[in-house]
Structures are given as structure tokens and as C-alpha cells.
Amino acid sequence: MNRHFRIYFFTLLLAVMWAASPAAAQEKFSRGIEMNKFIPKGQWITGVNVSYTQSDHSNYQFLIIENIKGDTYSFKISPMLLYAFQDNLAAGGRFSYSRSRTHLDNASVIIDSETSYDITNLYSISHNYSGYAAFRNYISLGNSMRFAFFNELQLQIGGGQSKIINGTGDDITGTYQRSFDIGVGLTPGMMMFLNNYSAIEVSIGVLGFNYSSSKATTDQIYVAHTDYKSANFKINLFSISFGVVFYL
Image 1 (cartoon, rainbow, N blue to C red):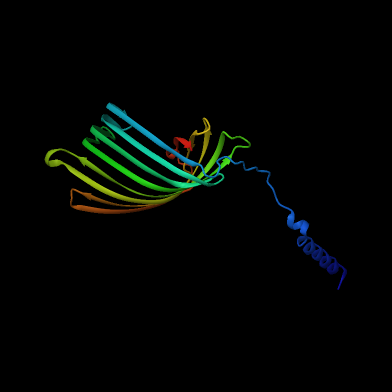
Image 2: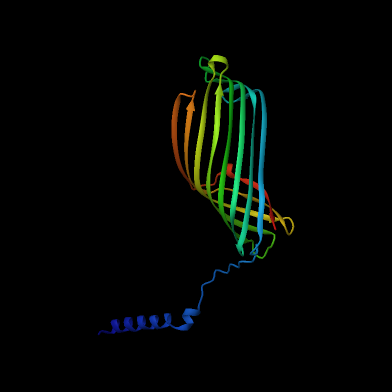
């Protein structure tokens, strides 16, 4: 057994003996992150997000679309109920309902001086509903008991109906569609307590897997099926939501 091998052997033996010693077993790695009890066990969390938009257009122009005349509105409500089964951990559910309607009296699509299309008497209405199973964990901002971040994992199942009608009289045509959706998403956010029992929060979707299936029937004759799958790994600015939450 040469000298270099003996040195290597005894070094390895000392390392094994130290790893098995009580001192090594008691040593813990710490990042210096303190987890405060921001949401105590046994607390109920409830709230609702509501949004409503409405617009009216008369001879409005946008890019190649001119003479837009019509009105539109959209409405969405999403109540929530969670229960903190451990400190800073909560689980529960959400329900979401949305409805939108568009009534377009007239619009002209003008591509150039010789190519243009007119759209008249277009009516569209849709409503969608979804149920969510939600799991949320809270991370306090340092020692603050007013500000915190949260991460919410959602499992969503829902569906919807919509119809589009175009034309008048004998020239009327329409499409009726039913859809089914399922998805998994991650929604981080930030919250601020206004007092001991109420807070405002803002969240945004950043990650999600979705599957959608729809069946459309046109003029009660033609039937079409569509399956759609997607995976998102980016911030979706259209998924930003604000809400008021109560901690009871």
C-alpha cells in the first residue's frame, strides 16, 4: 500500500466517521428566512372578485375597420371560500361566472380603395361558468403582519354556451356552441390588510395547463367539433384580478 493510497484511505475514513457523528447529524442548513404566522390555523377566508365593462360606439374607427356602430358589455363575478387547516396554509374552492354580449349594427372593413366588406346586424352573447379547487400558502413580508405574498394552485372544471346571429329576415344565419374546459394553474399574488378582518389582493396567472372541447352547430345543420390544448409559462396580463377578502 503506497503512501498516496494510505492518505486517501484515512481521509475517507475520517469523513465517514464525522458524517456519522452526533455533531454532524445536529447541524442544519438555514437560509435565514423566517416564516411568521401570518394566517393562523382555523381561520375562514372569503371574498369576491367582480368586474364589469360597457362601451357604446357610433361611427368609431379602428385601423382598417370604419363606421363602427354598436354596443357591448361584459360581466364577471368570482366568489371564494377557503379554510386555513394549518398556519399559512389554506384550501377550499372558487366559483366563477361570466357573461358578455355584443350588438353590432354596422361596420366596414376597408383594406384598400377597391376591397371592402360590410358587416351588419351581428349579435353575439355568451356565458361561462367554472368551479375551482384551490390550495393557497402565504409568505409574510419580513416581520410585517399587514403585507404578504401568496401562491394559489387551482384545479378548474367548467363550461359555457354562446351564440352568434348575423343578418335579418330570410338571410339570417346563426351558430350555437357548447364548450367544456379543464385546467391546472398557478396564480401568485400580493395582499394588504386594511384592518384585522379585511384585505385587498391582486393576483396574476403565470403558469397553466388547459384543455378545451367544443361543439358548434350552424343553422341547425352543420356540426363542428374542436379540441384545444395549451400550456402557458409566461405572465398573462389579461389574467390580472383585484379583489376584497375577509378573514373570519
